[in-house]
Length: 74
Length: 251
Image (cartoon, rainbow over all chains, first blue to last red; front, side):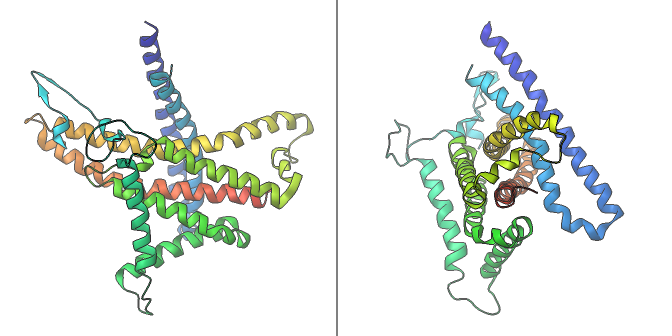
């Protein structure tokens, strides 16, 4: 029973990765919105874009890690 | 690829994670300290590929570069510009380490895309080692360059005094969590992409859906080529950002 509960918990934790995807999409859409208004400044900001995506994604990775721990370690 | 999903009676057996098993070359058996495994083989091949691209092709340098020489120059210029843009002029001293990281990761990722190949970067053991090395280097470098002033990174002077202890705690936690997200991001995306390709390959065992499975594998493979490069790029760019924090802790 406890093992099954851990699997349910892993499923709930996996929701966090999807929610982090919303954050990543938000970063990308804001970048595109800004880039279309001022295309000449866009090329210099791609590094910032990837850093922003990486930080937004980090929180999704933590929930992925929690899901992995619940599946294989608990 | 489809051999992994054999139909047993009515049910299909999917083994999408079997590709990540570390096994001795040429069969199954116990893995001891010095067993030459598939992981060791593909890590070695990645190093050989980097050597071929960056050393052998630039041996007979020409003013008008050959095709492979221009690829090597492109990679060199790309990383050099990234280091210079993010870390500034002082960061260029650490360019060789960052270039090594990028080339190894990108080659390991790309070689792992060959069917039946093993991807070293899909294992946490590999990526955690890389991320911990970056974390230790950057922390030690920060203390060597700035002394105790490096701790000022955690003490946000632009915030109100009452908030500073709480912010210091948050900054401290986020600093120590860096190697975790740094490593799990790379291993996680490599593992997930390869597993998805294998799941699509498993569907190919059913004759009705097999055309869609082939289409799915092709589409995922194209996406994976992109992801392989982007994840290596993100790993490298985050290394640059951490290095910048160590060199200039007050920005």
